Length: 228
Ligand code: UYC
Image 1: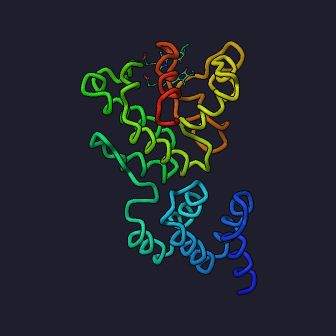
Image 2: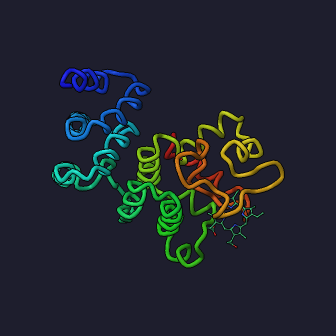
């Protein structure tokens, strides 16, 4: 009823993140009227940086097959909800698209490719990074990549999430690996088949940093001034 919708609407606007997280799928189940509330919510919040709550609301509108939803997004959020700022002329459109579509394996690959592009043509050919290259990455670009991952993963994935977990473990790598599902006992998780490519993964599971050549690249990433 109209009353139910209004009560959900109030909770969505004024509730805690936890409440908002529960309300969004309920509104999604209510069809067009629920959709309108979510669209109003997105518009109301468009002038502040997107959080994963916005990402979740955006996801519902994006996945709706209502023609009005498509039109709403094209009119109001033609470039998604995370601004794709770059200090080195890199386009993060494909990364954004794969994350919006929750194609996390493709997004993971694109993340490595974009970071190689940031490092320059040698790294693009090599297809992996030196830690000295990571140190010179622009703050802006790492923040854009991280923001995209955060917003489109319910706050679960991203370098800043990995950094937070790692610091909480006294910066101990051996404690980090099992915590984020990269190692089980003595056994490394094997790429790509053994990783979890959806939101059922542990917090911080993605994006991946290959440890074949040691931990220094990931150490550089997590120590980058982008997270200061
Ligand atoms: N792989 O095991 N990984 C690859 C991970 C290790 C290995 C790519 C992550 C351990 C080889 C990504 C983990 C190891 C290749 C990741 C992991 C190992 C490869 C593709 C858990 C053996 C083939 C991008 C820490 C014991 C490529 C890339 C090559 C690829 C990620 C082996 C994203 C998080 C120590 C042989 N692994 N990797 O970087 O370079 O190639 O030979 O970390």
